Length: 220
Image 1 (cartoon, rainbow, N blue to C red):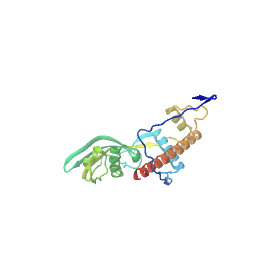
Image 2: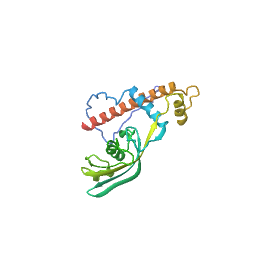
Image 3: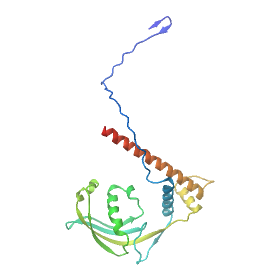
Image 4: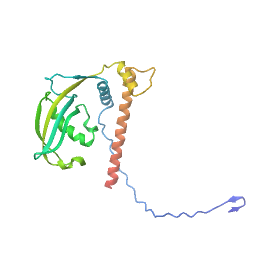
């Protein structure tokens, strides 16, 4: 209403449904420990780039499987003489970070890698592996079972790392469609990888903090 050129009004607010605000508690979250330093992650990113743009070299028949090799293999998994899984000419990159693999591939890689190291081309191996309880849904039937594995190495390839020079930077920028007309050199690439490492570790820290907060809230 208006009175003496002044406007006044009243409001009635209905809350539906009623919400009871409970007392909030404060809690502290410890600063997460990073998985690596910026320098270590930067070096790893650089190594991966050199390997990505490197040259694949097929080894001779006397070579043995070592870290970072590309291995072509056949394998069978059985339980109590029943075939569970079988693959032929499977490509296994021993440089893979097991933590970044899909759940089912993570289990397979974790079992195969230590057994493959030291094997020769054409060599076969039979070994047993006892699975635990924490398995992906599509592998639950293997939980706590002692399985028999048969593995044969067909081929071993090695990667000759790309040179650590400006040509590496040029390949990286061209492959990723990044336009740096005045800075397609190794110095610019090193700076780019440093920024990537810094960002990645910050995101990792934020994710760990969020996970801790959610866990504490659920616990309370």
